[in-house]
Length: 472
Ligand code: NAD
Image (cartoon, rainbow, N blue to C red; front, top):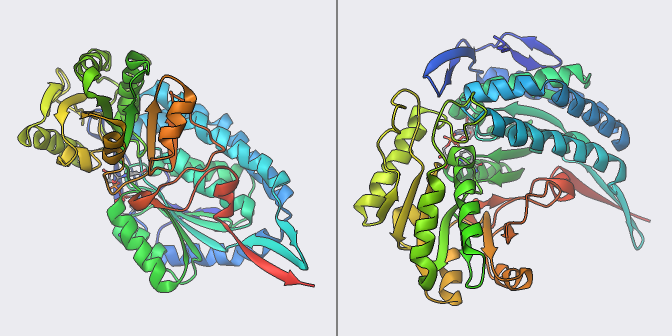
């Protein structure tokens, strides 16, 4: 596994100016596997200066040519896929099967989609007597989390590159090795020096310095709502563009007439995906009172097949959580659920059997959850499903919309049209209809406190462009 004792700035690996380091821990066995530099504000300065210097040249490269660079980058991701899988399994604890299928499969596809979009996107349009040019916003400060470490980097870097922006990336403390491997791919794809720069470091130090830097024109952040709020305030104060992809508490509504067994099985799989560490996880299952107890039994039975285990084992579907802090947080939420009177159907806050070492938690199902309970309102970020009862459709809409979040949702009904009609009443950026699959070209982003802005596809590209109207 690669681990650079350096930052990637202006086309080469160079020692950090700061002296601190970040230890990278394997969450399955709690062993330190590497350490990387904790970049300082001076390191961020150097990276932003490199990105600014590279901006005019990169912005002048024709979009279709920028697309060929992104295609070359995609090819590098493909060539080094096995290394990405091993790296993410080691530093995030994600099971290898999921790392291959989703954690690397989706970013490869997303990079490919932007390589194609570069050639077809209308960077110029005519409106009456105006020629409207869509130009790069400038230098992008990208701050990413650990839960989908490559996906969240590619979601920002690929469209920014196609738009003609240059980038400084500050990845999450827990998953810097994936980011370093990505920087190696950028180098191998022969992007011009300074177009992409990587500063590993602590959020409140390097992350904050990047968000505050006057040389950054757009801050694109994915992570917690608390930090997102701070970054939004910094960007607002400086009148700079900001994109925020934040948390969620997404509802899955099963309407009478739907295939209940299928809906519940899909929901349990969704909540165990990535060991529950997905911002769009469907963590609230809303079921009509007449079918409620049947749904509880189905959920309990389905969870039994998700046994936490060694993430390097291809048969394992649930690994550890990313770190001790997240483990303590998820356990505390499970205890809180019991304390507030929810019925613990399966799981609980004790370590899973035989998994005392490592940051493992038990996949957990709660029944008799009421909408005002903490576990029904706050993002837990672990494999914890709450079943909530409703009496009629209006109540289901009220409960589904009754949190500060609005990232995703799902609806199951007898037919697509009924589910879609219900989906129109939901405050969410994405709604799965009867198990509809993830679409890498559809805009992804939140309503309400789940965020500002959109990622993926043409909508994701537009985030990195601003307009200039030439009147003739
Ligand atoms: P976080 O928001 O603290 O970290 C996300 C990124 O922001 C990291 O790169 C971090 O270094 C950086 N950061 C932290 N403080 C910063 C600051 N003051 N200025 C600039 N950058 C800063 O998230 P976390 O601690 O890794 O996870 C905590 C919770 O966040 C989770 O339990 C979960 O609820 C949520 N989360 C959401 C997503 C998502 O995709 N929406 C992803 C990860 C975590």
